[in-house]
Length: 126
Image (cartoon, rainbow, N blue to C red; front, side, top):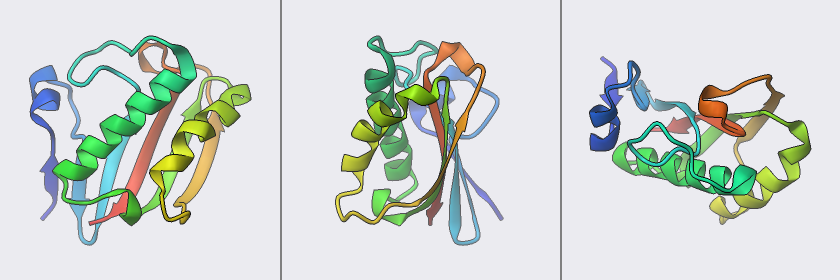
């Protein structure tokens, strides 16, 4: 049976999805943006600030699920502007301290929720 994972802030926001679902040996994280935790507003500052907040939000879900960055196996990154790929990578890379990066796909998109610059979904060993 699947385990549905939500932080208290996420539950308070009342959104119609789970932040993560554990099924079998994997945890599937929903797409995450650089919003202020528990609020439907982006952090100010553009791609770098949003990327940093997004990674912190993902880290909080990983912690809630009892996992971590070192157990991540796959990510899909959605960018509103592929020209911001380098700026995103500058924030993303330090989260993987051992230099072992998950498999990753990047997709340029027309629009993300709240006008976000970046969104990422992940698969993690659970």
